Length: 497
Ligand code: ADP
Picture (cartoon, rainbow, N blue to C red):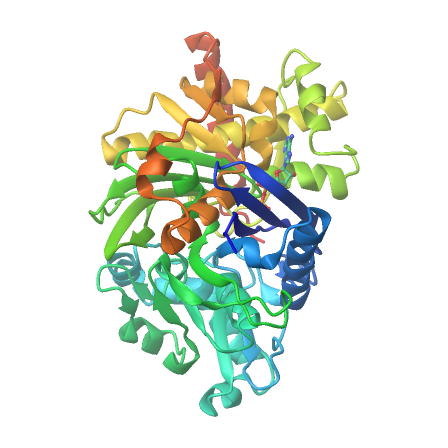
């Protein structure tokens, strides 16, 4: 049967998504569902890996059945996923040994501090491109090995497997046949040597992580295996593309060329600059990471990571009950003239680029008797733009590239107030594509290239239409607002938590 569609998974931090694209790049079917966020302890964030897998499967089945599409019409599956989030599971029972530890979780701060005190920072940076932080998988794996009963024993008996969410999904989808990941995901574990392209034995030894639990690392575009016949009526859909969500979004945004940049506004904010085939190291807190590997060629990126962006809005909605929906924040913020002096630093999980402070914690400052709910909501949206400007400043100085335009995507990029404020505060043109689903499109592209469904030439020639937000704020005002933000951040760093 003629293959008509590519299936793509976007397994994000707050939701699972499945999209089918047709040959003309159009969305033929789409399903999305939020899943459980588990906060068992102060600073802990967990996900149920089984729930994630079940939702991805249910959504894919619904995409097919509700649109009368047969699995045999699917050319290939592509997967993009929340990165760093760590799963350990028993290869015999197929069960995770505990909940997945999410990238935002800070329980391993002390482990990381010990590694920093031992002087491993430069070694880690030169091998992995990363800074030592609880954000990455290494300390999470160590924590599980040390705290979950029998975990080390299981590893010794070759019963234990580690994976980021992509590996977990591949293993489940192939009924345990393939234990693998791709270069872009591997580069976020703090255990992968990004120039030699292999698990780094020295780091594994230093961090006391056994090599036998690590997955095989494949190029981003390659054959990762076939989905087992149980799932889609005996049809074995091949998995041809796998990438971390931010790298997928870089590709999905059309940033194929060296020097192109995107910013994704999801749970966190992640700015990636394509540095081409050259591995560029930053000396001031940008991360060097693998963008993707296609046709035996590895592409690198510089990255700035903001841990809490859309999640601040989610928190106002779910925990503070200040909003019914995330999108309501747009109207509330634009309905008032200014922030009335209120600044919100959403350092819920410490702060990433450029501060790299695991001890920073969230703070609202500048509250007075006339502060309203709308001011707080507006301050939360503004904080997303300020944090992005923090990253842009560093990106400019480290790369020497003048940033005049910014390609954006992700859930919170649908917020017009935020996009205009971003243009104003960063003094750049913000380009928002009409379709802001760059991550899932990136995953589809990788799978389509691997299976021959689309060619690179077709992708390059694809036209996408943008809405442009142009800076309108006077320089004086921009300077004053940003100065205040910097003052606010100073006050929440190194909090004794
Ligand atoms: P992820 O891939 O990290 O799961 P998404 O790209 O799906 O994230 O975006 C979801 C995040 O964006 C949530 O944290 C949500 O609160 C936020 N968000 C979604 N829509 C809006 C909006 N219109 N305004 C502000 N924030 C939004």
